[in-house]
Image 1 (tube, helix red, strand yellow):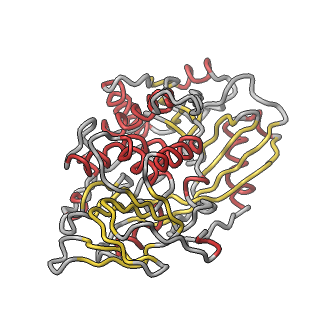
Image 2: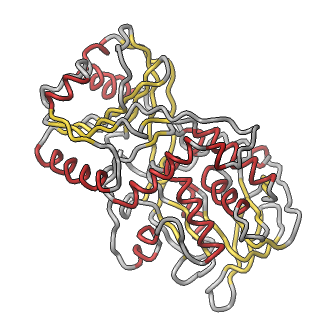
Image 3: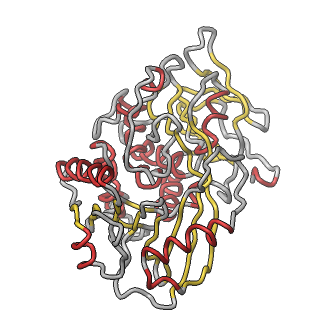
Length: 406
């Protein structure tokens, strides 16, 4: 495996599609391509760490929500919810494939000022037009349904108990990877270190692997997560994606709640939810710079000085809690507009982006993987028009902003 200094050579010298990165998005694209009866090409997935010890996929909290401000983001997550709930069906009823439960505890976006309350109401209207079950609740209605909250400073909230919560994202990933391999996609533990373009610079003709092989390619897919810019620069492309550190804490409560805790987004930015017999909380740091690609060091003061006090204030029953586990992971953060970057580059026409998901990655991976496979196979999106996410908006300096960022 590459993390031990070992590299695997590819079986061939030419592939129709080379996917750089084999975690959630590389495997999503590989699976949807290999499953598409209209695609009969060869697929090479190059992953620098086949143990997946440090990728964003293994550090994710696997959350699912429809509470977005953009209609296309709502529809992307609606497909994800269907995909997860019908996981075996999407795998052609393969008896080996497990059923996956979507724990629909819902999201609870709390507003403590009129401005954000209005944003929630506008977003609720967008979600409702897409068929989502989001409801705007007053502070009194919140207290009636969830009496454990302290809502003294809260004006209202958006809440949805339908197809919102969390799921086992790693099982989705494992089966995408396994099934794509069975259908012919080749995974190797190696690293792309350079790319060769044609004389006009309009196409990537080949990639160079860390082990020295030169591999010809028809299409290159950048599925490199937080390392996306390292891959684009090999093709002479800049992209506004950087690794941002996010913290997750698992805690036990001396006095557990008498009902499930929705994924609650406090006005401070701290979020919390039920997590089996425990509870999960998370937050960004107060200062949020780009970090080193290998920096997963935890800052324990964030729990002591920020998260715990905020949790205890919002839910007084959580004054007596005990931290049982914690970790730090990375968002592949799009600094331009915090939305996904998809589609081909405007000049290097066979370089495809699947990048910059800014914390929405797992829940968006079914629709984005399917759409990217459609684009490669047919030259267009078919099931969902994902063109608002295309790279060209960045060159035009036209942000496609999403207001519901956690």
